[in-house]
Image 1 (cartoon, rainbow, N blue to C red):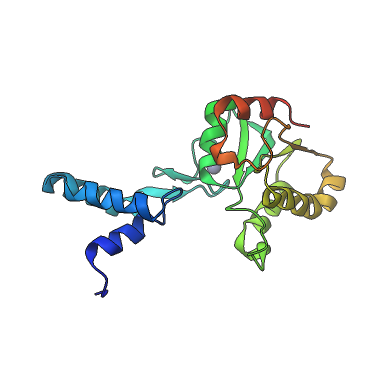
Image 2: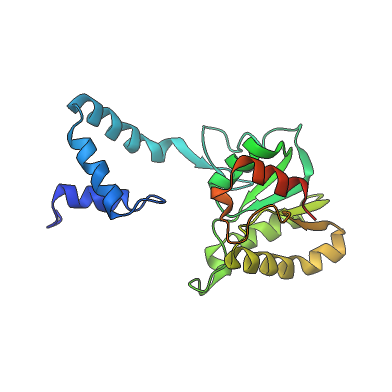
Length: 202
Ligand SMILES: [Zn+2]
């Protein structure tokens, strides 16, 4: 067992979640202390059940809840397989789906190229992306990356990797329009901005 108190350990756990700092984490811990035992047991059981319920799609690597091999987007024959939209994170898929009316396929990269990553080839799904593009009839590759320097770098990186394939397979590479304010994480863009950026991709 850890030397830290239960409250400390819980607080550290909450701080692993996006946007939660030490103060917010402490508020969560205190809020839990006020809850009924039945709530806490049920809540803990839900969290414990997550690893067994969440799968990564074998094609686009999106995390989803289900028992199928493919997610709802990859498994849907109605969706346009000529379009492949690349995002950094799982939540980006949900946001784009909600905001834009996009009807093609997705690919979740698992992050962005940043100075702290020494080996992006290993840490991001670049090899998998190359494989996906080289084995499919892609017409448009859409880079839906954050409007941050990391997002920019990631885009340049992908374009470089795709260079040869693009000449051979003749697909377009487009990026989201300038609707995304500079410095914006895709994850935090509101629906209208995202919709506009998507419509104005070039
Ligand atoms: Zn999928």
